[in-house]
Every structure is written in structure tokens, then in C-alpha cells.
Image 1 (cartoon, helix red, strand yellow):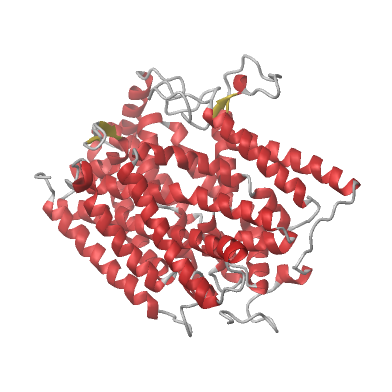
Image 2 (cartoon, rainbow, N blue to C red):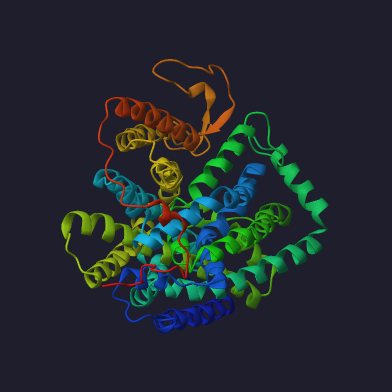
Length: 547
């Protein structure tokens, strides 16, 4: 702890203090009549306009872990790490129309979570609960990963001790986050997202102009990366994809795009917007973040050319590759600018962590607490329950980092992506049709979830010595369907999430056909066709925050 970078720390703390004040002040920003209602506390009054929604959703999707992990993956594996760019580009056209329908039906019926919609669409508490639990479980490690990103910055500034002392700054930061989120709800991260994004754009644009100039240009940078990967023993590393990992790259990008807006925190940002036109403008403008992400990813190759070395995590004794980008800024920029960069990453952890904890709390409150524990809960009781749940979720994520190897959180997030994809039939497809039977959706969820987790469990990672959960790339040779190996001998890799989703859909269709032939009751649909097209200003539109 004696090598603390004081100038960087002072700049970091000053900016952190500024957003803390903003977080507490947000309770009075665009305030409704009360915060004791999920419409107000959990969705910001459902009245965010184009700019606020753009910063909120962007701040939600492009997280602190993105800022450190994508360049770190480029640094360690090369081209495979660039999958994050195409998936964020294709995500918006894919979700453009479904999100409009989800916003409309949720606004018309007062739904706060995707599980609320499933409950209303199929009248099935079981299916809604499966969707809610999947969302909560998939979100928890995602929050923990924000702490991984924040800790990489704190470690670079000198807080690299083992034990409780090394985690103390992180704990203080999240206590402050918990307090102003408890008070202000979704308005806090929505307001702070403005500062976060402005800092990120400033830092990245300066970095991609200054660093290549200092290192001799992009030709030198790509040459250094190519030289590094040519010496690597891995068959998948390189500045270009090869025959074995091209399908993995394609399916990982597609699967990640399909999963992006199934996450509860993404839905929360969408439902908080004022109307359909706001969402249309945002789905058109949000790819601007992908340009930023592409520039950010290239910092991984810049770090190779600069000879940047990751710090050793004193708590685990292993190299922490997530410190590559912070270390790059620490080595090549003045202390004051490095402090701004660290603040951008740190605040970039607080915004999505707050939204994610609110989304998970909404799921718990609406789809478990009210469904099974207190059916007659008032809006004020729901809001109180959600506030308490958001605290538990945040400190649960901190416990992951303090008491468990951070690598385990990364593994859980890998699992979370496969898990959240299994809610696609019940949420996204149900926005258009009820042809899939509710028992088909339940059966498909179980098969997709079980098979996806089984495939992940059996993937080793020789580089780290792990025998299980070593990655999401499955060699087609290992694809075994009840003893049948359709691609025996093939070393071509594919993303496990897509394989599990295809199994889910196949089972859902087969069971739905059988259930319809047997005329099994498919539940009552509480929605009307008109609900999927309502917009702000419509006559007789349900008021917000009705008690």
C-alpha cells in the first residue's frame, strides 16, 4: 500500500465525490409525487426522454468490465476479442421492433419486469418464476464483474494488498453506491451516466490519437501484435481468425446480440423511456457506442506494442490481465489524465451496477415476493422490498469479490450469458405469438438450461489448468446427442449458448405440437392486441405510479 499513486487517486476521488453528490441529488430530479412505487423508484417515472435514455442504456450496456476486459482479451487472444464489436452492431436492428412491443405492452399493463409480461401473456406463475430466477442469477455475477473492473483501477493506483485491507476502498465505494441508489432509485444512475459517458469518450478519443503517434503508428502496433501471436502456442490466438474459430466468432456474436436485451437491466432501461419514438431514436443512435468500443478494443494491441505488463494480484498471486488498460494509461499519460481515465472506468462500474441491482430487485419484488410471499403487497411495500433487495444484491456481489476468487465471477458471467438466452422463447417470441405452448416453453427452458450447463461444465481450459467451465467455445467433435456424434473429429468450435438455445426451441416446438393436439389448456392471456401498439399520449393510457 506504500506505492499509492496520490495524484491519480486525488483526481479519481474528486470525480467520484462529484457523482456521489449527483446520486443523492437525483432523488429530486424529475421527481414524481412519490418514490414509494416501482414505477418511480425502479423505472424513473417511465418518462425519460431521448438524451437521458441514450446515456442510460449506453451506460448500462457498455460497462466498466467492458472497458477493461475487451482490450484485455484482444491483448491476450487477438482477433477473437473483437467479437464484441459486431455483436453490439447487429443487436440493435434485431431488437428494434420487439423492444417497441415490449415497451407498449408493459406501459399499457403496468409491467415492470420481463417476467411480469410472461405472467400476463401466459397466466403461468411457474414460467414467470423461471424467467425471474434466470434473470436474477444471470445478473448477480454481472454486477460482480463491475467490481472486477473497479478493482483493476484501484489496484493500479496502489490498493493491491491481500485480505480485507485490499478490498476496503471497493467496499467504501459500494456502500456509497448502495446509499444513493436506495434513496434515488433509477434516477441516480441515469443522471450519473451523463458524466460517465463524457469521461469515457474523452479518454478513449485522446488515447487512440496520442498513443499510436507515440508508438510509431498503427502499422507498428499491428506488427507487434502479429509478432506476439505468431510466437504463441495457442492455435486460436492471432490478429486474424482461423478455420477453427470462425464459427465460434460468428455464433458468439449472434448469441450475445440475442441475449443483450434479454438481461433484466437492459429491459429496465427500455421500460424507463417515455415512448416508442424515444426508443426508435435510441436504437438508431446507440451504435455510436460501438464505434467507441472498436477504438477501445484496439487498445489491447496498443498495449502489446507498448510492452505493457499486467500487475500481479496480491490477493491471488496471479497476473491480473484486467489491469492492462489501467496500466497502459498509468505508464504513458500524466498522472492527472490517468486519474481521469481511472475515474471513467470506476464511474463506469457504478452506473451499470446500480441499474443491474435495481433490475434484480424489481424481479424479486414483483415475481417472487408479491407472487408467493405477499400477494396483497401495496405499491409502497413493493418499493420498500425492492430497496432492501437492491442492497442485498449489491453486497452479495461484493462478497463474491472479497471471499471468492474473482475468476469465479468471470466464469459465472460466462454461464449467465448461456442461461439468459434460454428466456428468449418465453419473452421475445411471445411478444408476437402464443403459438408456443406454456408447457412447451417450460420444457424447452429445462432442456436448454440443463444441456447448456452440462456442455459448459465439460469444457476444459488447459492454459489455466481448469477441467471444467473453461470457456464457452465447444469443439463440434464434443457435441454428443444421446451417443450420436454428428461432427465426430471436427475441431471447429461453436458457442455453447446457440447450441442450447436451438435445443430449447426444438423441444418447445415438439411439446407445443403435442399439447395442442391434446388440447391442453394454455393459460389466459391478460394482454390485448392493442396493448402492443400503445404510445405516450394515447387516450386512456394507464397513469404512472397508480396506488
